[in-house]
Amino acid sequence: MINVSSIYLNGYDGDVKWEFTSLLYHEMTHVFQWNGEGQAPTGLVEGVADYTILRADYYPPAFAKPGDGDRWDQGYDFTARFLEYCDGIVSGFVGELNKKMRYSFDVKYFEDLTGKSVDQLWNEYKAQYGN
Ligand SMILES: [Zn+2]
Image (cartoon, rainbow, N blue to C red; front, side, top):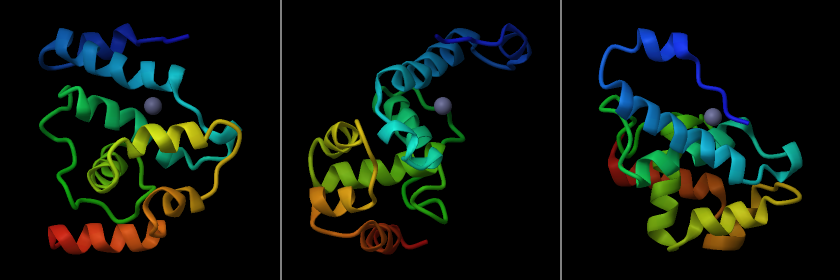
């Protein structure tokens, strides 16, 4: 079930059709994604949803740039950029991570898929983009 606030869209200063599409990409991801039966960090769940709008090229100008953010599970666009980085290391990473998150969640999943812990990945990600 997806509810879109008409008040929000009414007050949106910009291309409403574009914003609506972007919002739907994000919300549709929540319909199809797994969250480890509630065990996955909210920041990761929202990050996967924003990763969809990033890959669909439906992200706003204010979207995080590669290397932005303080934590891998900060959420939304920050985590989306980190997931993009992980997907660059292991092609199909986000899809595989999502599959593993069907019944449970463990940060070890990052290591299972890439051979590196999530902290190591985050440090290398931050080092690569120099901020
Ligand atoms: Zn969301």
